[in-house]
Length: 142
Image (cartoon, rainbow, N blue to C red):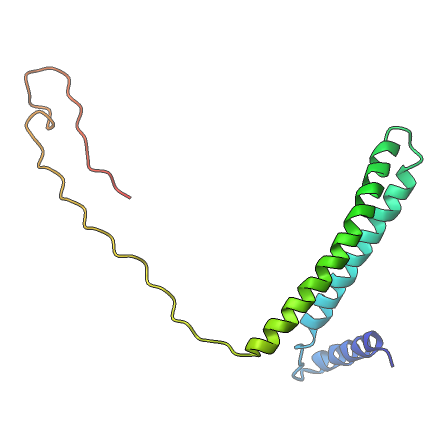
């Protein structure tokens, strides 16, 4: 029985069990949601490819579609070479270090220098000066 059909039947039986007031284990749902997301991503790429193929017949968009085709023709060989190198280095480093995970203590933030105390307010800052307009300032807060 395909996995999706088994998951559907399991969901149906759990729905019936819920109505009966029994405990239902729903731990399998995140796996289904994740696999659906992967399928949707692949289908989205296919839909865009099909859309551009249909738009190639439109006179104004034809040039853009040709540019994308030429770009993809140059990018695909690079991606193949990059994937071979990436897998090679990945396997080499995995064989070198294996599954070792070192637990490193997170670095503490650098201590901050204490801020100097603000100067005491003068008579001029308090507004009692020679009668001229003065501006009262307060220390910056951050």
